[in-house]
Image (cartoon, rainbow, N blue to C red; front, side, top):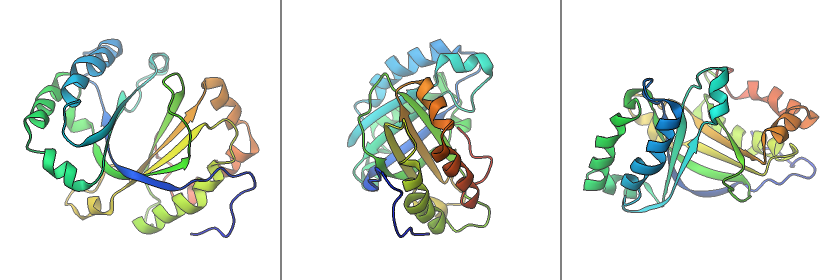
Length: 229
């Protein structure tokens, strides 16, 4: 659904950036979170960096405090940016990719760590600062809703609603590529949303606003209630 006007004071950008590969990592249970994060950040990152054609590689690690209240659905998210899908095809059989795949079972459960290929849209432009908190949401579209309708609603209707929520420093939508739905196994998620805040206090303040409540109530029109954060 298209909107005729943006909310007042909207910071909506809606700029298509590039292709992004998103891997949701589930660590091996016997490995403590601190050891998992250290291995991923150091040894595995060094193996990934030489991958030909990548523009950017980002790791998002779950805050260690989160483990005090239970196990998160995933222990981190890896993001790799490329110019196009040809780049992805070209690096599949490279020695670097073979080394990556060989190392992955050393620290995470490959079969429980889905990969989706997405198109990234920058809704609120802003810096990616290491000290900021990044909130990641894994979206599943409303049952029976066509993929294209889901993507259009999320981008052009829901996106502008989020831009007026106070405290959000950056907001990016990653839409699963349509080609992913032509495979025998459907994609694990229809998209991934990423929100940047200065700290946890800003997240809690945002959730207490009318703007947040309005956007939250709108989710039922295009996504399933079991979408995960």
